[in-house]
Length: 270
Image 1 (cartoon, rainbow, N blue to C red):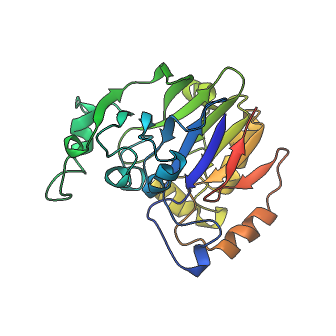
Image 2 (image 1 turned 90 degrees about the horizontal axis):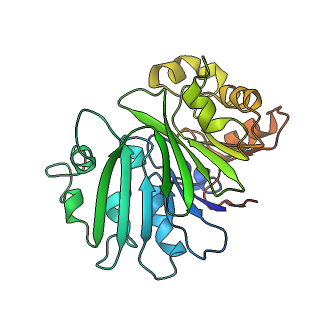
């Protein structure tokens, strides 16, 4: 399995010389199966989805986009996904089910006039939209487990993705502090790599609690508790500069390897 980190920021994209090394795009990770030359799964569709097209080597996207939730920073790249918005694309998009609405109806709440010029139905190619419940699914060549996680403002999922040899977990927005539920255990226990929300630091605890996020310490504690092989700290605050992230990384004490996610990082696993 290969992971391409295409966007690692939370809340809003950022730009400028203070953010060049870690990148300014919001959440998106491309997943490529062993033996494939192009990715077939996208985890979230933040502005980092714009970087996905280059991985397709001129080909249309044929695969699945898994949204962790419907906040803007996790779907705002969708209408700008050139490899998916073309006549020969074949895309399935899965979002957490809620409010008795279809997948397309849920997306239309943010992507429709007057908020945006087109609705999801206006994307070119073959697009299918599914509102999914927690459970295990065969998606492309992977087994994907979806489970509800704690985050404010609508239903949010974490995902576990397995190819039978390597397991990764993706929890970009999550309140890690507190009870380890059965669902959380199913997502994270024993994974080779955990990509986890680390938007805040302990001095910002009140903000983390107010917005439904984790601190770096929360993420490390969860990874230790659930026997994670490698932790990738993800969903950086949009005000956190490269130098500040470097300083935070140097201060982490954990029994497993810990990386600060950066845009363009490639993880070859297995």
